[in-house]
Each structure stands twice: as C-alpha cells, then as structure tokens.
Image 1 (tube, rainbow, N blue to C red):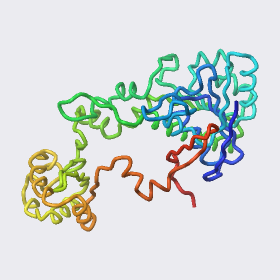
Image 2: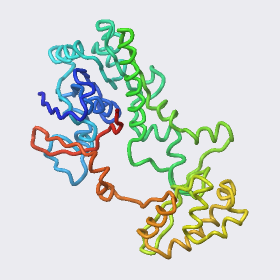
Image 3: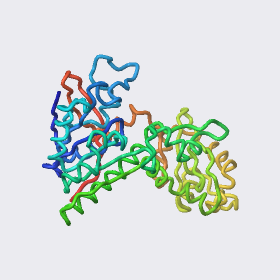
Image 4: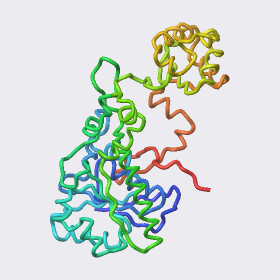
Amino acid sequence: MIYVKFQMNTPFFQGLRVVEFASVLAGPAVGMFFAELGAEVIKIENKTTGGDVTRGWKLPGEDPATAASAYFCSVNWGKQHLFLDLNTPGDLQQALDFCASADIVISNFKPSSAQRLGVDAETLRRQYPRLIYAQLSAFADPEDESPAFDVVLQAEAGFMYMNGEAGRAPVKMPVALIDLLAAHQLKEGILLALLQLARTGSGSTVTVSLMESALASLANQATNWLMAGHIPQRLGAQHPNIAPYGDLFPCADGQQILLAVGTERQFQQLCRCLGLESLLQNPDFQTNRARVVHRQALNQLLSAVFTQKNLAEWMRLCKENGVPAAQIRDMASVFELPSAQSMILEENLPDGTKTRRVKTNVFKLS
C-alpha cells in the first residue's frame, strides 16, 4: 500500500531519494526535514503491526477510526508510505529495491535486526558505495540494544533530576526533547555526509545515539558541575546563574509575567520601568551575582509592584523600556501569533483526514 502527497516547501533537495526505516519521533523528524526541502521520502512501515507505532498514539478526543494520530502526523508530512512485512521475501526485496536507488537511508533498527534482514549499513554500503546510511540508537555502545523512549533518556542524562519545582518530584519535559536533539544531530551528520559525497564521490555511515545527543545538550548545566562542582537542582523556571531570569510574577488581572533579565543594563531598565531605581543603590542587587544570592528578597520587591497593573500594560511597558519579558501562552494562544500561523503545513490523508502540523525547518537561504 502506497500513498503519495507532494507539496514542496522549498525544493532544495529535489531529486534526492530518502528511504526511512524509522518510527516514533527522531528518525521520522529527519525524514520530514528532507521532505520539506523537496526530497522524495519513502517511509517503510511494518504492515504486521499497523505501521509506525505512533499511528495509534491518539488523544482521548481523537477519532479512533482515522489512520493516524496527531502525534504521528507531527513528523510524517510529505512522505510516501509503504507498508511491508520485511520477514517475507517479496516485501523485503521491494524494500531493498528502494534502497538500491536511494541516496540516504534512515534507520532506527536494532543492529541485530538490520543485519538479519540485510538492511544494515555495512551490507547496503558494500553494494552501494555512494549511499549515506544514517543510524539512530538509544545508547552510545553499539552492543547495547536496549529500547529507550525519550523519557528514559531524560532521566538517564540528568534532565529530569534538574527539571521541576524545588522540593517536588522530578518532571519530564512535555515534548520528546531528546528525540528532537538527536534528530538535529543526525541531520547535521547527513548534511556533512552529502558534502563529503559531493567532494569525494563516497558515501558514509552516520551514527547518532540519543544518549550522546542528550549529554551534548547539557551545556552550562554540565559545565557548572565539571568546573564548579555544582549539581543543578530543581528551580522551576528560574536560572541557576542569572536573576531575575525565568522568574514569574502575578499581575493585577491574575495572569503572570516572566522576566529574562540577562544583563546589568537590562536590570537598570527594569528598575526604571517599575519605579524601583532605589534598588540600583542596594548592594544586594547591584550585580547579577548578588541578585542570584538574594533572589528571594528581590522577587518579593518586584512582586509587590507587578500586582499593581494588568499583564498587557506591563508587557507594553517592558517592551518600551527594553526589558525582556513574556506572557505564558497556552497552545491556542501560541497559534494566534502570525509567526506560528505561517509555519503550519497541511496534508490530507487517503482516508480524507485533514492534518496540520508545524514545519521543522525555519532557516532561510539568500
């Protein structure tokens, strides 16, 4: 069973063929990246299980009769979908025929499964030296075939320990962030492999693990430990190195404003905006280091002022005074923004279901 939907966003990769042996989020996100940029992406799904497992990951309010969940649709735009049982010779040969004409193969097969089927990197690249084979795994050790969904990596890589409110249980992030980080790493590797192919005529094997992608993204939190011996703790939205940054304040209408004051000049502008210029003479608040130490006292002073006006008025004043601030938007409010509206991609499924999702590339070349 194949269905096709081509609606090119920017046909930069027109003529490129990608075969996707990947499910869930990270691998399919890479496939959609290339589809958005004009590549032909053929997604091979297991017909014995109903295809990609995320087809069935439906919210309680979703129609159970539709062919795909909103989750599945988020990273599977613009692809051809081919349902095969790779354990049968005819279906396996059909998949191999697509690989023979592919420029890129994306896989999150367990290595042992890929080798058994003959769709592993070594086998395919021996036959097709120009092929770029992109392999995703959960952990860095190629012998470790343990399954791992995103939340497992959030826990293992330290994200959950430091995410949440002080004194409360660890919290996972509400998107599969590690999958998305791994997808970005794999895309970067594939793009370098395409550059090498253009220069040398030789293909490549690109391997990315979710665990290493997560560790590579710990950034300042990792360095706080490696250099200062500081184990990051749960601070809610607050920042361990900057204040007020990520701090929330209730306004007169019950809505909250978030501050992200990252420089001394911005703190001075905040004080003028709030009519609290006296804080600039207080040694407890004169430097960022002092404000981090005395964050609680500072926030009490700021809170007393923010409750005097509505959120909209404070947002206007902050913008006029060059103070980085934000309102806390739910998803409905997010998609009232013109920038969000312009990023929606639509597609009709074969059963007539109208689908919508956000495009995954936002860069512009000129």
